[in-house]
Image (tube, rainbow, N blue to C red; front, side, top):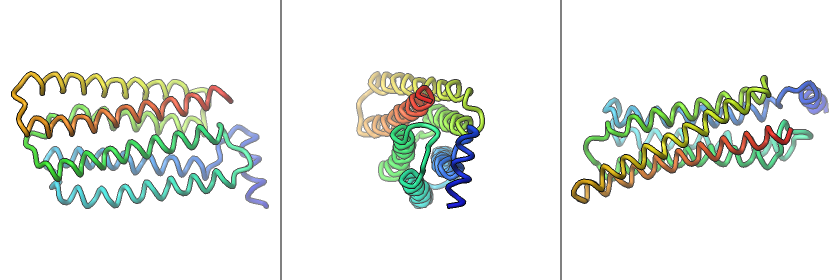
Length: 211
């Protein structure tokens, strides 16, 4: 009872429920770690096998934070934005991590050469996740800044999709070998990451507009 009253007072003062915020930030931190792991893998700082195994642990941690959010939503008396928007946001963050997992897994399976060319796209992925994180933190402490941070994440998602188009153009301009088709699959995974970042930005922006 005391816990619920404290949470309600925080919300009445304009502060986001810390349990909800912590769960979202935990998801985003795990997702960012997954992106950095993918960067380490393509840069040769970590082997494909080790990266594949490590990503399983990161994904499990992200799933744990998502489950905590769902549990908190079921128990929350009041939420800073609509429950549906918080749930959508969490789901799209999960999609980002799942697609990064698939990127690492397929790299492990395909064993293609020259993976460093994916670095610019993954760099944008990290920036997009960080923008989402800033937006969630703003929702808790600076609601007026939510829209700006969400817009930045949305733009970065668009950047990733444009980079995908250029990569596809490059691949199709050369001989379509089995190696080239494997590259296409990995680039496609990163495009899906960019789409999910944009969708997450939309979810938090939509929720903020309804406040």
